[in-house]
Length: 194
Image (cartoon, rainbow, N blue to C red):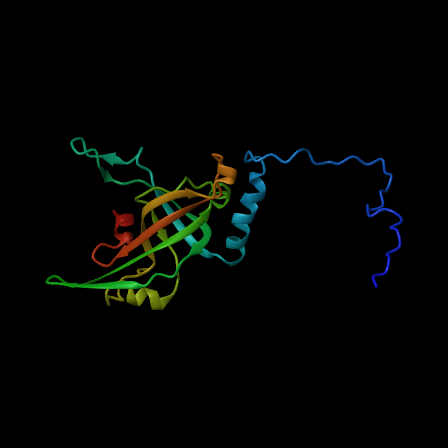
């Protein structure tokens, strides 16, 4: 035979404390106004454990241009700017042809927008140059066996730059994804010397 439960007494609501405090936060709005918080999230992990990067920006406005083809003849470079970013490890892709062996490295790098702003560096564009991985191993293996080239093996061409991390689909974004490439047949450091 089923027992009868005693009637419920009291309330299930939490105890309300009477205070004179008012909430400090306004209504939650998804408009990108909380961008500084997202900037902090994007920069903090790369500042703590990111790779040091030297960045040269190609200043196309002040570069001497060819009058016929409108291409830079004498490039003007701004930098190097010292930054930190997230670098994905890049495997070399060897290629053989009748001209000999060449190697290409292609990968991605993330740089926080706030990192660029704090260094007074311009936004990265296609054609800019980055240098990273100050490691003798990479130096010896990225110049196709010629270890006599000083400071070689770390320079990469930016072949694409995309802004990423748009806060709540607003125009405010937190960083750049760069697609970079290094080719042994035409290394990026040669462009800086010209």
